[in-house]
Length: 137
Image (cartoon, rainbow, N blue to C red; front, side, top):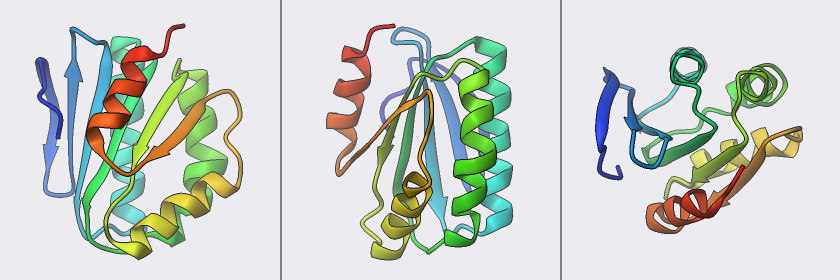
């Protein structure tokens, strides 16, 4: 995970959420095997912090995800992303897991379309972070 200059907001076995106060980016590190339930829980936690701190940029790191979670893909796209946009998210950098099935789950979510949020996938954390820093509102 990118260094958190600020706050660790959530730390659970399946997810760590931090807030980089200097760059104003929500930093999300998903960990291990993910299920529909863990994905939904983590996403709802992200939404709470996004609203509370009025953050418009998310660095969503799946580097440490080790499983498929495609049973949550449609919910992520159809339910959660629109609520993230309504809460103020404008830019979403999604770092792929090296696990092929996790990567396919992320692609499946994005295949439904994300309206209002510029969501881009990356193969490495540093490039994703640099892209987010370059995005202006």
